Length: 285
Image 1 (tube, rainbow, N blue to C red):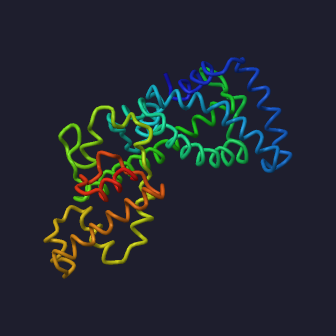
Image 2 (cartoon, helix red, strand yellow):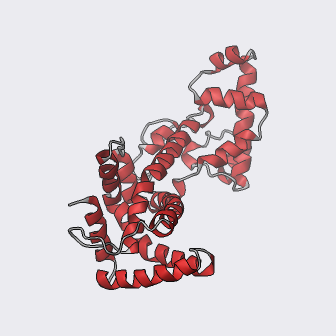
Image 3 (tube, rainbow, N blue to C red):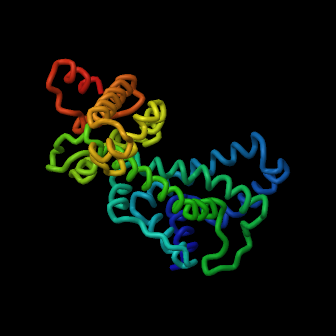
């Protein structure tokens, strides 16, 4: 079945009213919106209704993997390489927070493209004569979301990988339940990604890092790149002790940020506390 036909089928399954009736209503609605140049309060109401009707369908397609599969088919048919890692598909099936993160990103950009293409440029054709006939505006919007999925997914996957790399710092190298070390081990631990609170945005980490001195930023950056303390010291022309000191201070800064709820640090990543002060820090974080 063609991609557009599969989208139309998903919409038909998700909405109770007849498609022909939806299209007739859509024609009248577009005429009304055109009168207001697809702007203002009337268009905002339409846009909110569009999101409300299509969100459950899109969430279901993310959960069962059909949205990702259709996106891969659509891009690869056009010679644009696109592949979704099986572990990411598993995560999207199991983790509502991950689905919501991609969904919101995808919807925001899709709304802009939908307004421009479907409405302003009049690319939505209610009189299309395909195997399944014309599609309603909901189908057109979901098709637009599928085009935007590739960008939203790659952005999400990149942020997820970057977050893993950031937490590979030696100051957060405590043993994980499965015997791995750091966040990379945690990401492979059974059930870890199923915890909604484990999804943390990397920009919080970056904001905190950007507040540090240039030398501390350089030490942390080189640590992320995989250099050891001695290599970092040689590269930056500082002592081995200065490297350790910068890392320790930055770790303490992260714990302080955790107490202020600017960042969330999984309990498994806390450095093993050896003093009452350390235990207090870990508990607060």
